Length: 267
Length: 210
Image (cartoon, rainbow over all chains, first blue to last red; front, side, top):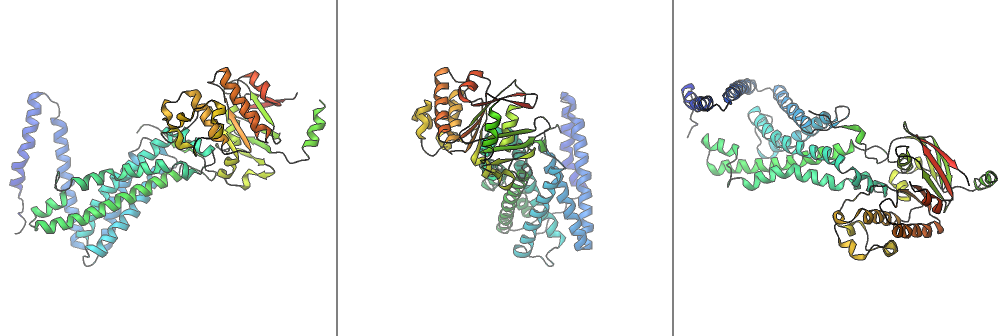
């Protein structure tokens, strides 16, 4: 079975659903037709651009171009992680922690998967590396932003409890252990949900895509299981790394809680 | 002031606590020498910097200057090592477990002296009264047998009888060598407990000799 290639006509028919939606909004005065059409337009342009960019990158097969694309994707994810919490660490702490976490965790999990499990030849083949990094980044973004958000939010809320422990002679690491654990738990919650729901409540995207593209379901499932392991690993690593690094940015050489290094401005 | 002579004598032995110019933007510089078993009570209007001084001694806020415990410089030891011996008990107590007992190793012997019943230790912190929490926090600090105790308004929410119990326990500890720096708004309490008294005003402290 070869994949069924979609033509412009097929897409046009499906797009009639959007047109219908917009017409309904207009008729019923829901006021969402404008937003809907703009979002549709954006989606089409973005995806087409990515499609053509990937076609070029795949055709050239350059390791440097592949690396460039991967790093660009990672930096966009890092920016999103940094922007999520309401609180900001001084000296662009959110941004630098986001970048360090995303780049290191992505590199680790993607290289591990490409060199041991999937093993394309060469290992950095863009057809494998770029989609894989994309999926891993999605889970890092989720878990990293949740963990960072919790640390920066809870450090302020739990100030009295943390300083009470410091005042009794506990180290900063001891005084914030519970906070760290909670941040990691929150960060890994989405991937735990995703794994337990996989197959029963949702058909994971990659698997669906491969089945639609004509792959045998059991082979598609094996791919999906491999990916879930990668996502679980990268989620945990990202949550641990960003939470621990953020806590380190909230203390000094004298084991104090330095909330003065945190600004809670509006985004 | 014949005490000036006495002060010179006592400075020949190493004081328990010595503050050498602790200062921040808002308070100080502070120079104090306190001996073993001695109490310094600090009074003054709110916002004068009393709590800031205690936090500075406990090294909880960034500031300049150094402090010495039995001649050992604070800067020469780790912050947790210092705070384990110079314990700060803030006016607002902090709790990090749900149950009271989880903050203790069993029920401390001095609990009864403070009028805290053993069943209290099975309770959730959230349902303790502010007076109970205040005494529990003091107890939590005392079981660690600090060399210096920094107390911020120790009896604020307590009635006269309980205040007496707290002061009796403190006196007992002072008798066996603990040094106490206490912030209080209660002039009578300062009178009752302190051999040395000071007044804080706009970040400056004046020692009142008796």
